[in-house]
Length: 203
Image 1 (cartoon, rainbow, N blue to C red):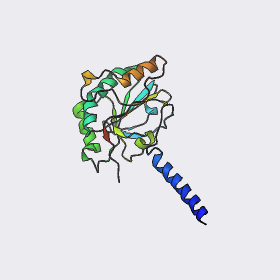
Image 2 (tube, one colour):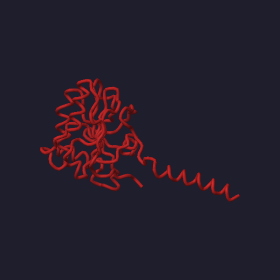
Image 3 (cartoon, rainbow, N blue to C red):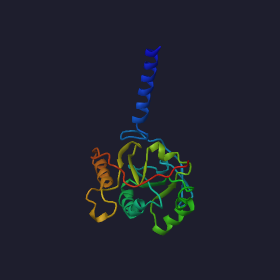
Image 4 (cartoon, one colour):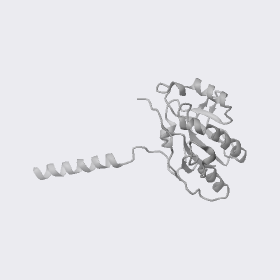
């Protein structure tokens, strides 16, 4: 009997070990194909999917918001990325994943105001049901997922290596990854740590 109990507790201990050591966050990895989604654009109230972009070479999907200081620091760089690379087939697709019940400044109405005041040139989508960011595995704002034209993830992580000072950033990760794709190469690095605020999730 004691031997049997020991075996049971051993199995339970092993199960608990795996429960606490397996990654908490799932989501897409580099090389995975992304399922399409449809979210409302705060700029014009239209519903937007990746397919609605038509003939593009890729997508700069970035989870961002109004209220995170890191997201605010990167707003001008997102505009610059879109203005530079959208004409080359790589538009920015910005998605706000935050629950406005926790962060009222990230409400749909606030998104409209922010997009207007900053003159966003890219679509600013609202993940109102908070279903898209978990599918991607996004954990921060901002958090970038660069996709190729087949919607395959080719880079995940930060926009560059200096949130506080754009002029001091000497590793423009997203821009370098896009240039690699344009040249038919794999981005290197294809993964960096996203630095920013945690995504605010409904309880």
